[in-house]
Amino acid sequence: MSTIAGMPHILHEETISSWLYRSTLRSRYNNQYLAGQSFMIPPPVSWGGPLVESSDWDFDPNTDFLKAAMENLAIDVNYAAALFFNTHGRVVDWARRWWFCAQCLRADIARGQAPGWRKHWCYRDSIVCSTHGADLHRLQVQPQLSRGWDAFIQCLQDRLIDPAWQCQNFQRFRVSVVNRVARWKLKQGKVTLDIFDNLYSVMLLAPVYNGNQGMAYELFGEPGPLIRLAMPNYLAGIKYGAEFASMKARFASLLLAGYLMGIVGDRDLAFVAAKDERFEAWRRYNLDLVSSMRFGCTSKLDFKLLESLLFGRGELPCDTLNRALRTYFFKLRIQ
Image (cartoon, one colour):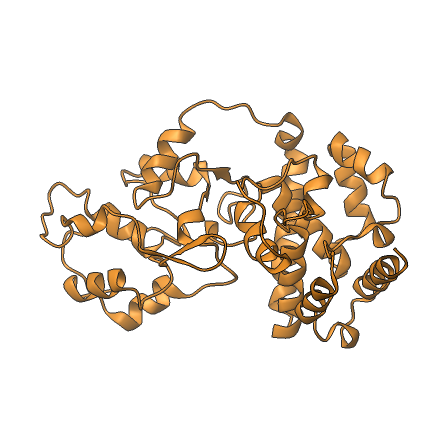
């Protein structure tokens, strides 16, 4: 890509906002635009429901911030679109992109580069690093353009990590499940992909007004998403649950959605139970996983919304999902 001389090398899978911020750190390169205050303020926000939505300074080239940056720095728009703006899934809001790989940031520093933020950390189902196969860590401060540096400083501090999840075999298993789902998705059509992504989001349902929340938080004893207020309705809970969910809850949701879609089997669940005692305890109380499935509905409107999210399921080869839904709807009718 043709840019002004002196700007830093673009890291693999780096977001454009990260690259632009790292450009401001080059002491030997002085550019009036890069030194401007526009790089030091958070993106503008708007109300998209119960929570604010930020302008996407990573994937939306139509934001004023990125338009001005590409114009002032002579960045070829078409090449930038191919390099920065293509996505491979549903991304979380810009201000809620907390998850990062500590090994990637350390590798950046080891190569003499300022740490950069990667695109594959920004998805709703980001669980492990696609480069190192390591679990992602959560940024403990509000994300800013400097989030790469903030995350690197954070990962220098020793933190207690769940010993069960540090088991090498369990780590490799999580990577294999993530990769298995990714390969499966490459072979599916849009309808099937939408059903899977919607299932994943439903299992991570954020707490709604009546206290109901997604089933995924139960598998590893997670308390629930880190969100202050309950969501006002079922749709909002589905929309924001994955954005606030922990890495363990995300993996649990991947297991549940994968099981319903025939990607994950009983042997996989047995392996997880052997590695994590909390999951083993949950499994003892949920021996028949199909009849144990819950989708968080509490009203007829919720039922209709769930059906709309899983449209066309009767025509798809996912018998487990069909049986789980039939059982779930039958239980609700007799209550």
